[in-house]
Length: 245
Length: 245
DNA sequence: CGCGATTTTGAGAGCCGTCAAGATACGTGG
DNA sequence: CCACGTATCTTGACGGCTCTCAAAATCGCG
Image (cartoon, rainbow over all chains, first blue to last red; front, side, top):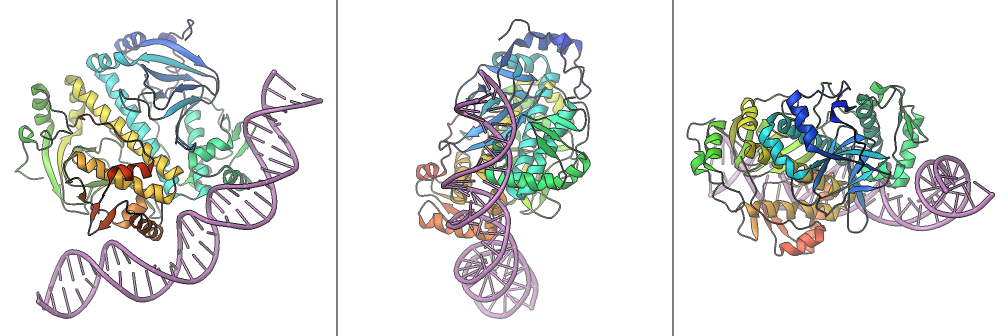
């Protein structure tokens, strides 16, 4: 945890169109709710499956991944967390974590105390409401993911997270509109989509040959996002500023 | 919606060990929050994917299923709802539904007004907290489901919902410990697990030949729940009274 | 420049899907 | 109570999507 933390007053996320702003009272509370800032290197596990943790986090900068590891080593990625996303809340409010949260890039997190969560609900129903909304959004994302893994072909499956991550990253101004730095290996795609690494590689080639996108050097380039969206057969998402804490 | 509704004072769920009781103040609020009761026949869609709905529901009696239907007709079941589970909240707090909720049996639901939700957060932080907890639990269940579909073999996959539904139903006193009325067809299993109906049928036979359970006449019989749990390789769940609204 | 991580490619096997048809159970009306 | 239509379950054959195994090529980093 570092001293030179980002003051909430000057939170870079608040300035982005994607996120809604706080009221003065809410901002004051969040400032006190935030107990510190955590910066970890790429590859670090921030929250560990099976462990208890006294903190809740919001991603301030970087990419994280939530995943479950089975006893025999098989892994399943649940979701990716981008700036503005909370992690540590989802498992369940006070039980042990059911999944691991790992940094995919160098990662900066705002740290909140779990003990203060009740206080948030008691004194700031608006923020509590926002938090619940965020959890329902997470549930929706995982549900969509489940639909993909359960019912779509390999080609459709791969296209979905490319489009999805690109769209989410763009709304956070992480992309210039066509290119995006994407810190995922093909193994990540495999563990996300329930496919083998080899099959991911071959299917990825087919999709790139179709011109839907281009992956290289940890970068994605999407020439036509609408075409990619149509290929995934996923409903396009509407845009309205979303809350964050 | 019927007139002879179940009064919250005499809610049959409150009496079960599985659910925690309300404080007097909470009970009063929930009584006013509940605007009616809805009883529908087996097969009825209570909430429709793509539609808006002014209500939130809690299952009072019966089985429901939450599922997504793709444009070409492929279906993916997200989860099953049993007495005490909320439906209609998850999609997202005020947007259109992203999935359908359908009655698997004759189904009775408590009806709550979405407009009052804000009031709940403003005046009863305890209930708001419970509601958030319920959503995180749903997210956990869907996450576990995703792990199953993404990373487990057909045999492991099928065993999981049998164990899971049996355990959940038993905690609601719907089973005598060995037998349970389970209103699922093999097609439901297929749509739940991302497998074909034919393959479900053949795998189901193998598992029954192993003696893990027996399905017939819409009944499951599980001779040894622990053995089944071990086979699924899913972590057993601890028991503590959970909230409901 | 050298080593580990990641990507790529090929071959062969097998799990699972599709197609098809028959058997059984269930609900409804006569 | 029986007849009949529909839903559900069962079984077999066959094809293909995806897996595993294996090895080479390329990339990334110190």
